[in-house]
Length: 86
Ligand SMILES: [Zn+2]
Image (cartoon, rainbow, N blue to C red; front, side, top):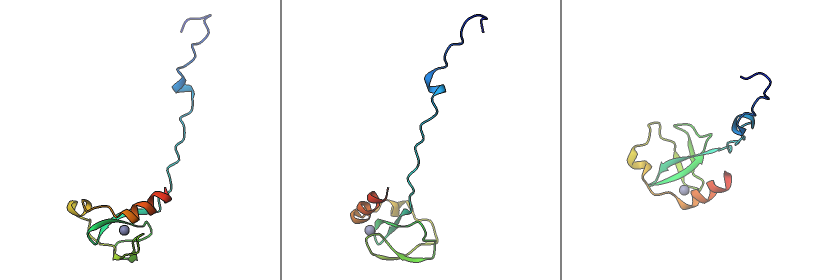
């Protein structure tokens, strides 16, 4: 630092506080079931019985789903419902 010289303003991205991007509260998650990827409530725990956003009954599997199951086609109805929740 040189005496007698005003301090250089710091670069704006250091002085500007970072913009807050509040994460949307997601109260659902994707769950492969019945040959498709559906959306279920985040409250459902493995082993619980519940239903998907499109109204299918399902039991949340205790095991992790296989990669193949995650490739099942997305349920359009669940997708549309999920979109309105984000
Ligand atoms: Zn569905």
